[in-house]
Image (cartoon, rainbow, N blue to C red; front, top):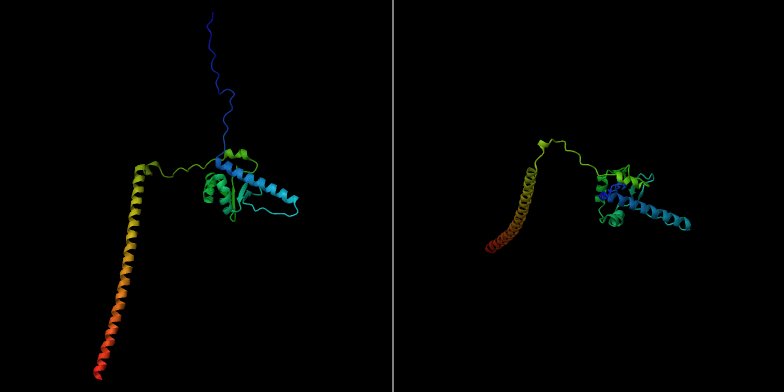
Length: 213
């Protein structure tokens, strides 16, 4: 009688789809806020068309007319209202640095408009193709680069020199204040001496006049 052969474990990889890539959270959040603002604008236009009195809504950020970029119309309101909601901070400069990190370009001189060839309205699937900029290789050969210990030593020396300069600057300011106080005291003493001399000269002249009389 043949021995029972245990079943071979079936590989989990069979029939399993490869894990799909996800876009960077910064890109997804930026895209989401633009889509949400676009939806709010469409609703606002629909309400305006159905009412007799049109009330225009001031835009803070939106896609540009071509849909291949976006415009921050009011950086102040964008920093105050949009950034804390999506990115947990209100630093517009930090937002721009993040855009630069992913290769966005500022395309207008008189407004904050940014574009990326893979960041387009209605094409969320392209976001996963946007990656961070890679650091450019150093033009200096390896043997010309300073070692870690040398860099640390240079950094420590620079910090020490900076501390010494700040201390020297502090001492110079202190000496300057002391000299100014001494000058003020000497001026006050000079005024008193002149006053005493004037009184002495006046009294001396009066005594001479009395003798002549």
